[in-house]
Length: 137
Image (tube, rainbow, N blue to C red; front, side):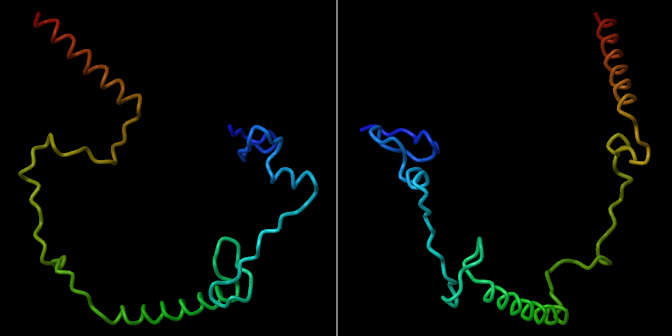
């Protein structure tokens, strides 16, 4: 027995002997298939919000409680000083840049070069390299 896609919806697979899938047959007859209503996982009374597993009432209550809890946590964290084992900024030694060769120091960003200027510089450098190779031979 071989299965093929339903020619109407092209989603469901049906045996070759069938003409349409059961879903398409129901739709063509005009029947409606009602999905069962999911109830809230907390109160088990109200239907859930789309994309969630809780109803609007429980969701609203949860967000209000989280708001109270987070504001209490903020007050506690402001009062506590955390020691992460790092030096204070005033204790850090400055790095001496005098030992770095100028060729390693990048150009300041204030001197912006256009793309055309950069390409012309590269072209000149390539031409100089070719001339030096030609002179060596």
